[in-house]
Image 1 (cartoon, rainbow, N blue to C red):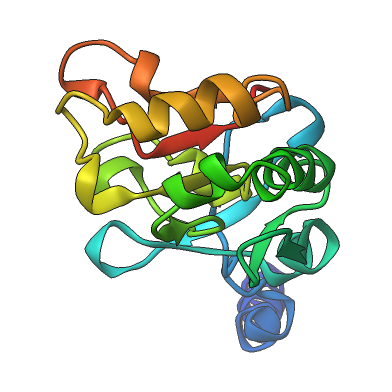
Image 2: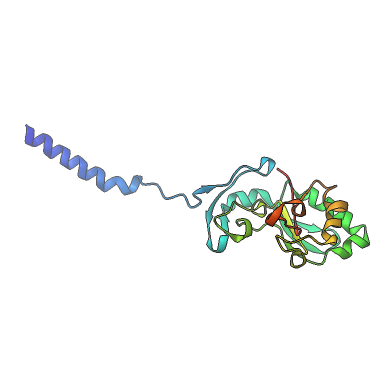
Length: 182
């Protein structure tokens, strides 16, 4: 009797082991979860090279939209809940020729990555599509922002509800960067 029980246990173990791959779950292709940013939500992602991240395409498809910016004839990708504020800021810019002259370059909106492209730092607000960089070469991070970007902040972006990286402190000062609060 003891031999039969051992044989049955051995046969069942072998059978279960042979079936195990059929029950195995595939690894999550997006194993990390972002912090929640209020109305802009949370997404699953995985690390990529150079401080970049790859966001679950289902989140991107549901949340990132293309918008044509008034006055500058450029289409950008942005979070659907930031669209109206961005259009408001650029409508103000379009309607004021002096402001429009201050926008020399648009240097990034939805760019899934870590701050400063450094994987040891938190995720950038650009990952949610809630930030835009303007006149980047004249406003490098850590340096005093130009008067052009300060004027853009005061007259167009602040009234539209944006925060400005020119108000960050120390080496975090980022005069090119305008972002929606969450």
